[in-house]
Length: 412
Ligand SMILES: *Cc1c(COP(=O)(O)O)cnc(C)c1O
Image 1: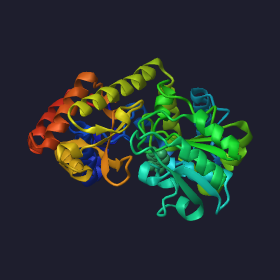
Image 2: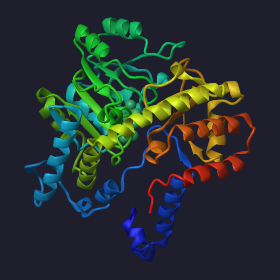
Image 3: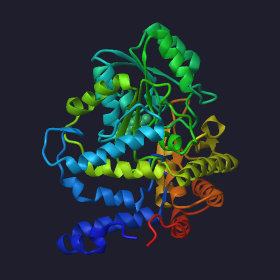
Image 4: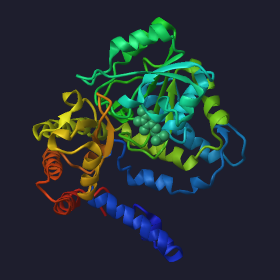
């Protein structure tokens, strides 16, 4: 199976050995360490083939049938297929597949519904809200008046009373639900009710769970939210990019918010790759995958708890786990560094109490590799042993190399 045809054919190596070595080095890193970053996955060789295709050369401002460039008759078909597959997959009246990233999808959603200065209610950054949910370092925090709700310090669950109170007192123009680090299903019906009561739009930022939605392993926000923003590269396992789903009533506003308001030419190679990924996600094999991702995460969460870490909310409904490693004698940042040295790659994240940093991990990538419950138990045991100092990171690195070696992400 040719993953990087250019390297296999030695084209890149002959022309630019320096970069060829970097590509090979990254492939080596990905296949000999454990990718536990909750936002990462391994897209298929077919998706990579679309990404590395001559569609990358095509300029295509506008939408199929209404482009500002000539020669779009072939790529128009690719985009129409991507849109049709996304609509079908998620039961949406309209899909826009041009967003270059999850963040640009959120920017376009705001552009479609809001004016600068409007009040927006979203999960606070200290509790797992995304940069685009009001960070002062991001356009969202600069251009809108964000009000943050939180999670209960004990249960780690969304504080519904606070959502309701803030909605009633602050009267936001939009409410955002969705997070970078929330391990449980989001109750979209609840958020819809609150939004209706105060006359706000509901924006679901489903960047993380949208792949589980595709596989029938998580609730679908489409029937509830005015606009659903998503990424295509997380659990969904497509190319790096974004997507927006909405009803027919907002279709034109959303399309204009993406192009020409916030973006220029569409990336047609990525859009073709999105179409390929949507095709894969519609198969029964993908539904099996999505459910296995959750099963693996539940086993991993239970084993981490047994090893003494404090798993937020006591478990997970999704691919994502957040945990406090401090009972093992290390803080989140130290833990991440030690685990990186052991070849276990994961992130730090916010914890419900909001003051200390925890660990965030996910099972999307290792499940794509074919790992199951047995491997999750091994990973939890090794992770805890490294954090406790029972196993030197260098020793653990060899065990990780052996484990990963049995599950090559791109078998040849
Ligand atoms: C990942 C993520 C995004 C942004 O995705 P990018 O492609 O990195 O811009 C937006 N919102 C949430 C909740 C996310 O988890």
